[in-house]
Length: 311
Image 1 (cartoon, rainbow, N blue to C red):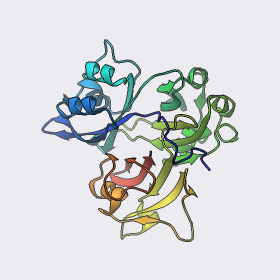
Image 2: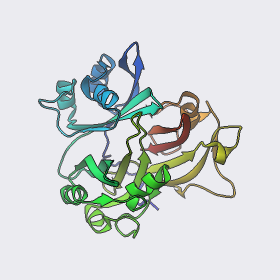
Image 3: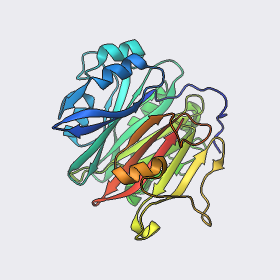
């Protein structure tokens, strides 16, 4: 069980989440969770990106996730607004359905001496997953270990995602024998890991991992929903197959699984649109939480899974 108290305010690793969608050849803002960063939100509402332009546009053009660990002198377009908001790094995750770009999810982080966590991009090279890039905040030693680690298919969190082509949730990273970097993860305070495949039109193997720390969590609740017909039948919808929550502990029950139908609730919205969402407040949010990010995985022309995290 995660050990972050729900009722105690915590500083999260991710400070902004936003969804960019294609419209008339450009990416425009669909929605976002900016917390109290109103000026950055306003700057974002007036922005748009051509393919290859800015961070969202680069993820679109490259057809894979992109990490940007510094904005000054980079292709990032909202540098001044980001600096005023204390944002220093970002990761853009494109959502493709075969060759069609559905959206780009962008998450932005600040940088200080105690903001710890990891957002990692793993890519296949010579039949091994190697670290393409990542943002780790203050977890510098864990970053170094990760740069010198590779995973065969089926090994560790990235390798397990690669082998199964499904999202996977891992607990107790510091003591779990399945997590290859357990010793350094424990020293960095990392507790929970979520890995998911990021399909690309090129067919390139890419895995995204989110590693959450005790003091500055990425989220206090994680969910994995399975929308494959083999799981839910021809009627559609999705079924919760794994989850962990600071308030409720284990979330799934094999004998009485939680289900979601298209257009009902937040998960249903993702099922209906095929798009990620990032929302703060509003009706229907799980009790005790202020925000949700939900990210779909499209495989072979179908929405196969949805991962969601709450703060």
